[in-house]
Length: 236
Image (cartoon, rainbow, N blue to C red):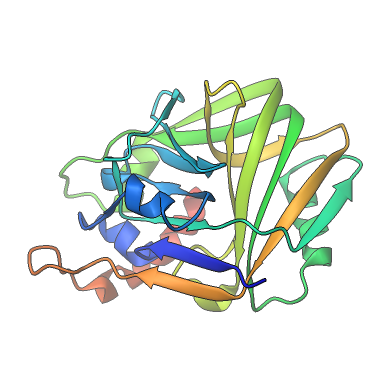
């Protein structure tokens, strides 16, 4: 079965904070699992089991309205291509190393998801960006709030993007979390999982990009943001 990833915008349009975007209704019509952010980078986005959730700058998680918009998000109609049974994982790096050994190659995009009991979970979210002379990465550094939880049940959704696609999306591993009680979540920095869990992989065979600028008032020269693209990895 072929799996298609649908993406709104690119990492460069994200850094430019272009206002052109798609609604959650349109995004959810393209897939039932994914992640991203909201218009004006107003919190983190997690799509889990066909529902879109927003985590605001305080770490509070709510069900996103279908009228809410995103200018940088990616979803897929989930199809498990392989599963990995894991005894435990001490940290984020251990999880990526496990997935590395089960990926067929470095040229495909992979989505992955799992549910676990995390003994520690470190994550972040952001407040809405405002008009400023600062770059997007500089504003994110100021508007980001970090959180730490212990012994928390969580759903994890993530992706792996090959390095050659780094102008399209953030290369390497990128994961978001949400708690099943729908109280909190965000972009994950690190986590430790002492108990057994199963990672489901979805190998992406096709990619569908919704280009960000489609009106004269929104078009920006995204080439101007290539240098800033390297700075985003400092926040990851």
